[in-house]
Length: 205
Image (cartoon, rainbow, N blue to C red; front, side):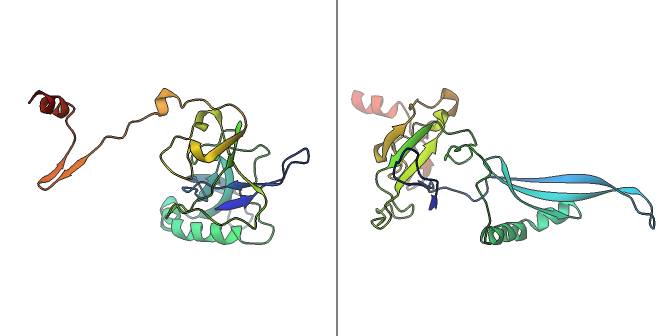
């Protein structure tokens, strides 16, 4: 899904940010108990509480609703999400525009972007087929922080081969973020993980 962005400076062609395939409208939800001191000349003064649901994107608060208790807030989470999506559709809504700086397009990251790519071929997330964007003359781009600048080669749309570097320097991901995916083989009698010594045994026979 693509969203409009401001044109590039210095007479450059207008740009539009292309959302990643795993883009989410909100990337963090919190429920907090909020105390307040009620002052009334009729019923008197006392401390009261409510539970507030906050929906965030890139660390920016996008939408809030309050309920009587945390239990009520939990029960109404689907309704709150529905209301937040409706609020996005209202004229003048300014969702995802809370930051003056361009933020990293990696889901789950709110760091300031330092790398900009041009997307060479836009593809459908479900079928991986190229999208027909012939009538949109804006330059499709994505922005990432240094930590997420290396995109790998595991997915057609979001791979290093599908990008042209326009600005910044690409660096490998930190070791703490790298996790190997274990291979699993399916057999007729169940599931078994590969044995690293299997190949050596077969060579000896």
